[in-house]
Amino acid sequence: MTMGKDYYKVLGVSRSATEDELKKAYRKLALKFHPDKNKEAGAEEKFKEIAEAYEVLSDKKKRDIFDKFGEAGLKGQAPGAGGHPGGQPNFTWQYHGDPNATFTTFFGNSNPFDGMFFNFGRPGSGGGAGPRQHHVFHGAEPMDIEDDFGYMPGFANGHAGPHQGFPGQPQRQANRRKRQDAPVHHDLKVSLEDIFKGCTKKMKISRRVLNPDGRTTRTEDKVLDINVKPGWKEGTKITFPKEGDQLPNTIPADIVFTLKNKPHPTFHRDGSHLVYKAKITLKQALCGTSLTVPTIDGRKLKVPMTDIIKPNTEKRISGEGLPHPKTPARRGELVIKFDISFPDRLTKTTKEVLSDTLP
Image (cartoon, rainbow, N blue to C red; front, side):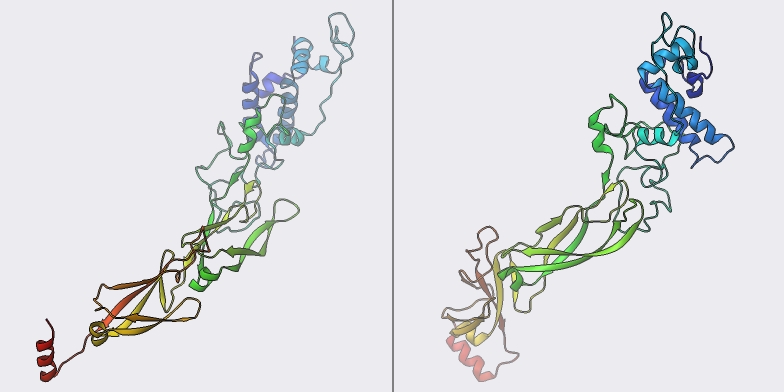
């Protein structure tokens, strides 16, 4: 016969309730009557009763004594207990009186309204962190405290990881406690000269950093060094892991820079090749010429052209392009294309000469 408080009634479960049913009942009631959420008279006392009931029924030894002798048995006061025949010798227990400690052990967060706990999808949330530009959650839905949570981001099936929870909680749930923000992408614009030689780019970013209290944030600037290797291709990605905004209960985003070529006044990039367009006259195209062609490192090349140059003619010079990304000692080609300028008009005599001369 149960004497004193009926812990099963407090949690609203049967005397045959399983461990999972006890957790489910405590989770729902603790969220409902938490003083930070429920301001009604009596809610705080109810919150304490719920915590005490769960402390007893979630512990096998305490529950066995309670089932046999009730609340008095836990205090060693019932007939048959405390050394009496058929009792539990030398056992006394008293609730520590701090329901927040029970709540913290169960959920892993003493404030259920801080950070991720209740603020998914709700305006004005963030635990005092202020507006965020790059923080994105995937698959998170607004939640109501009356919901029966099967899984909540930041918690493992309604309780914290093994170092914070009760015996027997699965360790594989611990990696669900935090979710990482989506990567933050930036373009890294570099010149062809930078790609040719390699360089170090210093990129200044502003991000939110957690204060020592673990809840509020401050804005902090940081300089990231990017070592651009000779020959890197456009589209190369450079990732700085976890350098994004720091906020409670989240893993900072990765910062990703994507290499982009700056427009060049002389050359156009084609992989490891450099394309140069030479302007020549129709006379030079037909009769031959000697070109002066610039290189990416500032030299001048003399390139004789003795054959007839057609609009689709290309001249390729090996080893004068950009370094190959995997083997920088090798270089691509300098590809010379031609822009042939035609005269606006010809005299009658010139036309007759050309007519007699050209096939």
